[in-house]
Amino acid sequence: MEDRDIAIPQLPARSMERTAAFYQRLGFDFEVVSPAGDYAIADRGSLEVHFFLHESLVPSESSFGCYFRVGDVSALYAAFSAAGLPGCGIPRITPLENKPWGMREFAVIDENGSQTRIGQVL
Image (cartoon, rainbow, N blue to C red; front, side):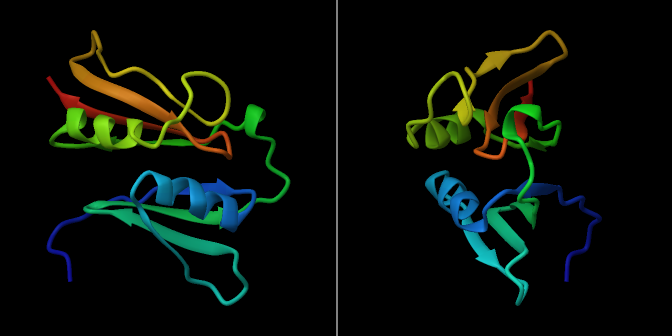
């Protein structure tokens, strides 16, 4: 049992199969946990995200997203970049940059149009 409070984001998945394939490319373990196939959990080390089935979602109209604050954003950026995601369109990865708000971060937009920002305090 965990000894600290945590928040776990929930993001939509138009297809659990396609969403699993996408996140597995990024190094996540992915498991559909509901008998109906409409809920899944992905984790990569201490990062965890849950997915609910949303078949009618239009990726280009999605406003879903979450933020992961990590200890080594450069290493995670290198690992995610190895997946070969494009720099534009859906899905995509953005460049790793130092932001004026004191974070070094990048974003991944998944095949469902959900944006995950990943950052480290400068």
